[in-house]
Image (cartoon, rainbow, N blue to C red; front, side, top):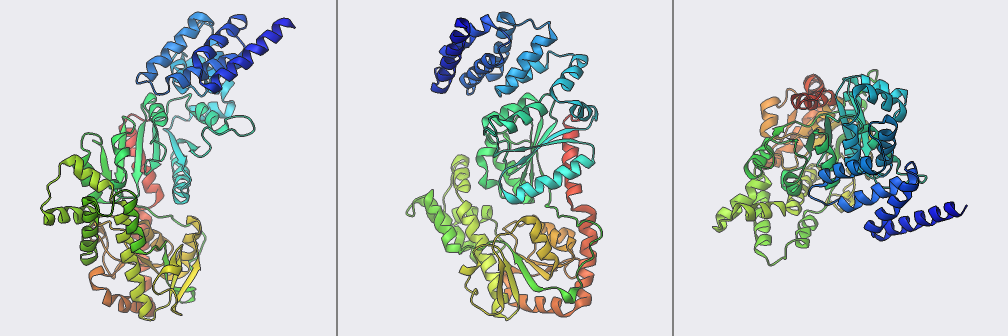
Length: 533
C-alpha cells in the first residue's frame, strides 16, 4: 500500500509539472515511475507528452523524436519484442506524439504490421489497408461551402478506390468524453502512409504541426484556391515540401509563377466544378418555376468593404492611396483584375517598388478586392431592379442594397447551406452570376446553374469565352454595357425555346467535364504522379 501511495504521489506531481510547463522535472518523475513499472501506460503517456511539448518548435523535431524513441528502447523496453514496440506505439498515439509514432511505424516488418493493424484498427481497418488505393486526407474546416465540397470529394474518391479520412479541424486538440477522439482517429489513419492531402484555401496545411505530419509521410499536399492568391501569401511561403497548388483563374497561376516561383514550383489551373444532381429527379418545367431571376450570394456596400482597408493601412498612407486610386480605376474599367488595377495605379503614380514591397502591397488588397466585387454585384442587381424585372435575392445583407425597397425585388432568405442553394437554383428560370474579378477564370455558380437545368446569365472571362458560346450554351452580358442587360434577361424569360436550348447544350458540356467526379480525377493524377498508389 505504501508503494502505491508513493506512485500515486509521483503521478500527481508529474501531471502538475506537465501542466505548469516544468517539463524536465516531469520527465524525471515519469522516468522514476517507469523504472518501477515499465508497463505503466499513464506514466509513459505523460513522459511522451512532455517530450512532444518540449520539442514542438525545435528545428530538428523529427531527429529529436527519433532520439526519444531510441532512449525508451535503451532505458525501458526491448524493441526486439513486438509486445514492447506495440506498447510504446500505443502510448505515443495517446500522447499525440506523431513523430514518434512515425519513427516506430518504420520498425515493423510487413508481417508484424498486419498483426499490429488488427490489434489497433480492428478487422475493418485491416481490410481497408489491403484495398491498395491511394490514402487521402480531406478536411472539415468550418467553412460551410468547403465542408460541402469535402463531402463531394470524399464520395468521388472512395468510388475510385481511395481510402479517405476526413479530419475535422475544429475537433482537433479538444477533449470529448475525456479523450481526444479526433486526434486518435487521425493517429490511427496515420499508422500507414498517407499519399495525399487535399484542402481548400490552405485550411489543413497552414500550421507547423500539420506541415510536419504531411512531410513525415512525404504526402503530396494539394491546395485548391477558391480565391485570389494575393490573399494567401503566408500559405504560399510556408507549406508542406511536396506542395501542389490549383487556381481557378489562369491569371492567378501566372501571379504565383511570377511572385512565388521558388516557393511554389508546382501550380496549375483547375476550373470550378458543379454538383451533378442525383438520378431520378425531373427538372421543374421552365414556365412553372417560382423565380424569374435568382441571385445567390451575399451583399455588402462597396464603401463599407473598402473602409476595412483602414484596419491594416492608415488612411493617409501611400498604400491606402494606391488602393483608393486602383478602386476607382476598376470601377471605371471592369476588365481590370485586382493585380492589374494595382500595377496600373503604380505606373500612373510613377512609383517603382521592389518585389518584396509590391508583394506586401498586393497582400493587403483583400478589402479592395471585396469592394470591387460588391460594386459590380450592386450595379448588376440595381440595373435589373430599376428595369422592373422580378429579381429574387438569396443571401445576407441585401436589405442594405439601394434597390431593396422596390416591389419587384424579393429577399427569399438569409444564408442557407450550399446544398439547399442548389434547390433554389433549380426553381429559377435564370440564375444571375457576377464574376468575382476572375478575368481568366470560372465560377461554380455557372456550372451548378446548368446542372440544375437553369439558364446562367453571367459576365464573361477569357476562359468562358474559350469554352462556351453566348446564346448556345450560356447567356452573357457585358459589365461595360449594362444598359443591354434587362433586354437580354427579358428575352430569356420570354423565349422558352431559346432558354431550353441553352440549358440542354450547357448541361451536356458541364455534366461531361466539369463535375466533382472530374475534380477527383484531376487530384488523383497529381497524387499518382507523385508516387501515390
